[in-house]
Structure formats: structure tokens, C-alpha cells
Image (cartoon, rainbow, N blue to C red):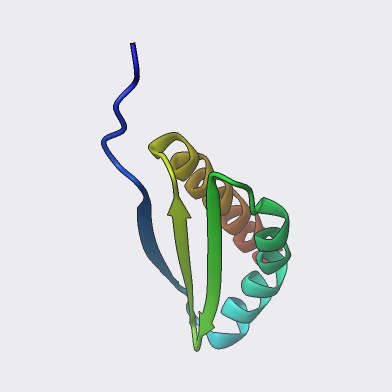
Length: 86
């Protein structure tokens, strides 16, 4: 039995707004190296700094890879913002 694929690809964009440009720059610089390491055949990510916002675009072949990518970036951003508070 051949499995029928419903989706060819999935794209999601999320925007994280920070209190200041400085905080956004710090978090952006801390997570942007992960973009090059997180690239694989099932999911790619683009990250952009726009004043006090970080815009993350994830392109994925399937929902499982998309969820894993989102979880990774949310975890890295959360960790970075917690470190900012120290």
C-alpha cells in the first residue's frame, strides 16, 4: 500500500517582539548560529532582525519536522530571554 501525501510543504512565520532593540539583537545573535546547524532535508529556517522584532520563517516538508523546528526555536528564545534577566 502506497502512502498518499496530503501536503507538499508547510511554511510558517512567527514574530517575536522584544521590549527593546538591544534585547532583540542579543537574542538574535544568540540563536542565529542555530539556523545553519538546524538545516536539514526536512526543514529549513530563515531568521531576520527587524528593529525590536525577530522574524522566523520555517519551511518544512511535514508537520513533524515543523513542530520539531518550532519547539527548538521557542526553547532557544526562552533560554536566551531568561539569561537576559540575570
